[in-house]
Image (cartoon, rainbow over all chains, first blue to last red; front, side, top):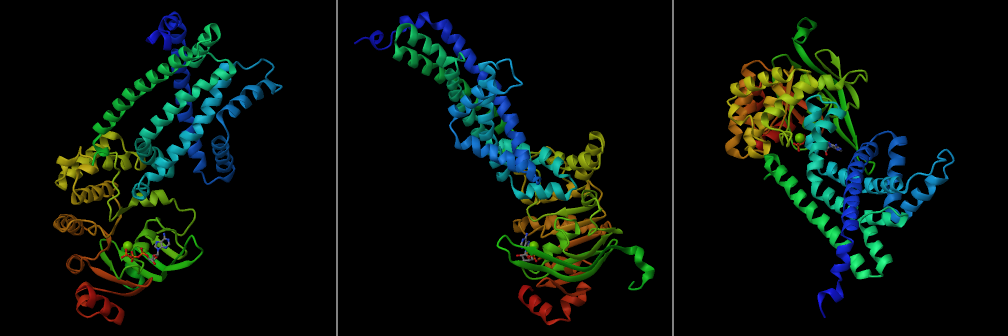
Length: 229
Length: 255
Ligand SMILES: Nc1ncnc2c1ncn2[C@@H]1O[C@H](COP(=O)(O)OP(=O)(O)OP(=O)(O)O)[C@@H](O)[C@H]1O
Ligand SMILES: [Mg+2]
């Protein structure tokens, strides 16, 4: 049995433009959602740590709701839900719904990671800052958050990798991305192996790119001597 | 000094101070009970006593790291129990040195000393750098300016932490067992620094287990036990002949 019988690379090569396009779509959608979810996750963490109940309670409910329901359900809720809000008489594009849902979903996980980072910062850092007269806000911005983020970079990168894989779910609402490119082969040629193997290669490729990037980032941080020892 | 005439000299006045902690399981702990004392300007006071006697709590209430349950502390006329008091401004004026240094781990020595100045004292970066470098030179630590805390020995870290507090030009310096976490060979360098501050006339309260240091450097000793201020006096007299049984027993154990 030759390779071409298992995996018809000739057919796949005809669809390379689709795959390249899908790869690009997955990359930029993931990147936008990553930035969005980091910002959202940080804001959520700030709100969760607030003394004000009206702020911390709803935000905690959001995190728990996201973590206890399937991403696909959240995506459908956003996709079908947004089209039913009367003020929005123009339909919201599927892509916008997808990016919103993914950011909303990943933001909850990011906030959990960041919160863990804050808890891992030594209590003495809070006291040292307080004792010189820094306000709560100055302490968080200048002392606690920078250390918290540095502590959780590997976890944030792990969550970013999950985000890339999760973005395949946008195929369910007909947003074109990497998996969508595979689905084209499936519908044109009925070749599931070629369709999904090639898509899988694409995700693997992105993962390897992220691995290189993460090593670069960590090397940079390790150069910052405060992390050593 | 006991009558009203010398009142200008009093920097810290502690009156009827009590501190009650509520633990998570609902118990209450009387960490301080009706403590009355004072610290004169330029005075160096040692606070000693057995573990759990409330030494740290007394020190921490003096710069608002713990709230006051009952009574008053006045520092330079400012009432710490008053809700309207700007506690951040007060803490800027009261330096605190911790057992575990609490240097900002992601900042160099120099940045540790400049950051509070720019954020709290609103000095420019250039002014703060100038003050920090002058201080580091004075303390013979300028070669460590660009090191991170993790690259310093305990003794070096503690001296940088003291420099960080001094850069704020505090009215009062508080030391909570500043040498307890240090390897024995590093205790001397930190004590020498503190001795230098005493010579310069800095007002200081030190919680310490270094009895020889207390005897040598301090003007007065406060002995605490079970949340109460049991006895206070001049070191020479206190160490030679404590007037209470509790102090006697304590000294028997530690000396
Ligand atoms: N945050 C807190 N919550 C509850 N109890 C506390 C807290 N801080 C201190 N205590 C209690 O208050 C009492 C006095 O503690 P404090 O730390 O002031 O003693 P100390 O004299 O400094 O002792 P040590 O020599 O061991 O440092 C102790 O019984 C301690 O357990
Ligand atoms: Mg203590």
